[in-house]
Image (cartoon, rainbow, N blue to C red; front, top):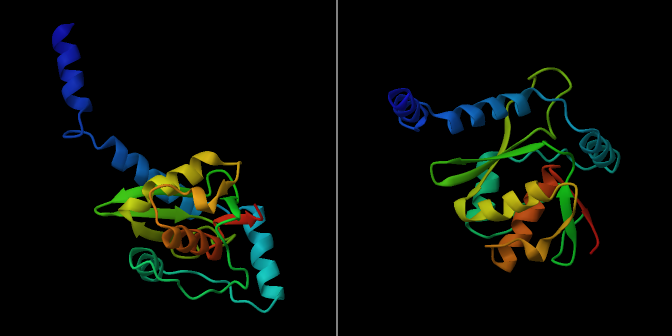
Length: 175
């Protein structure tokens, strides 16, 4: 019995089975194939009616915006402020995965209704943004004040919130 327990412990160590990596890969695949949340579809339609572009952010644009703390170009006419609150548009619409030295947020709000018709949607952030992104994901369905995103400077809080809002990952309301 002790030998079986010892062998099982060895097997379950990360050296032999990369369970976290496998779970992350399965979640990425699920999010890539998932139909977008209804709230995200309504927002995209409203943006189209207002004449705005559908604002699909590429990985480099988002990473540059967060890591250099400069504001990115906005496809949405609404600018967020520190007094506003944000929340995910739907439960499970985003998954945070740590990859090398970046926190990558995979999301489904810009997916097509046709199975995997579009490329996988993701936003890479600097690794120090991970606690703020985790808090936002875990808070669903509650709103989180932009000024309360921990571990970020005031400017980074706004950049992260605006990038997520432009990608359709979060909805915003006045605080």
